[in-house]
Image (cartoon, rainbow, N blue to C red; front, side):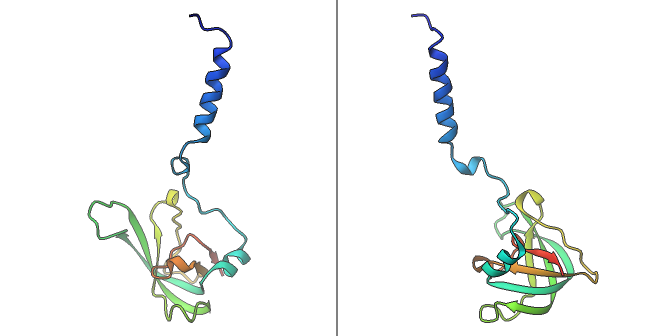
Length: 135
């Protein structure tokens, strides 16, 4: 049976449907979309002003099979604006080493101060996929 011009639109429709049904995890990368600073402050469980004292590259987990690295920033907390009831003191914050995983680079050992926020799910080890604005 010969294929006519009607077969091409059927295949095109099938490919479009398959593209719409693909798993979203395969098409997502860094999901740290920028938001207004006021939104970050309002939705965060922790808001502090701090200086970065030092930085160190550390493993992301104790699992030797996990090769992902994190940057551990030691901070000197200057003022806590929000989060008193959840965390007494924040000594370290973590961010992925790779910018493709929403990692950020902060200046250590400088006079620069940052406004840092963390969401409730990250209070155990606050990360930097939220706000990290120079203050």
